Length: 178
Image (tube, rainbow, N blue to C red; front, top):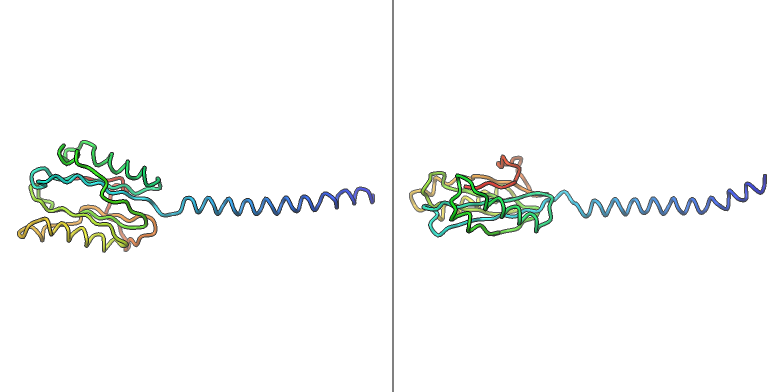
C-alpha cells in the first residue's frame, strides 16, 4: 500500500502543475479574445459630391460594424456606388472615403428639397456634436434662403461613443444615400 501512495504522490505534483498551467492558459486566451475583438466598431464614411449638388445631388454611405477598417471602407464605398433611384450616376462615380472613425458618431444632413445644394456631414465624439457639425456644414452650403431647411438625414454611433440615448439610422449603419 505504501508503494501505491508513493506513486500517487509522485504523480500529483505534475497534475497540479498541469492544472495551474491550463488555468493560466485559459485566462490568457480569454483576455486575448476579448482584447482582439472589443465592443468598439470600426466605421467609414464615403461621399460622392459633384460640383453642382443642386443639379446632380450627392451620394453617401457609411458603414459601422465589427469588420476591420479596410473592410469597413470597402463596404461604405460599395454601398455609396450602388445604383439607386435616389443617387445620380455622377454622384455615385465620385464616391470616395472621406473619413474613418472608431468610437465616434457620424451624421449626415441635407436640405430635403430636391434641386438644392445644402449637404453636410460630420464625425464627432458624441451624437449631438456630430449632428450639430453636419447641420452647420449643410447650412454653409445651402445658401441664404435655404439654411433653415437643413435636417439631419441619418446619424449613428459606433463602439463606446456617446449615443445620447438614441440613433436615427434605421438601416443598422449599413449606409444610406440620397
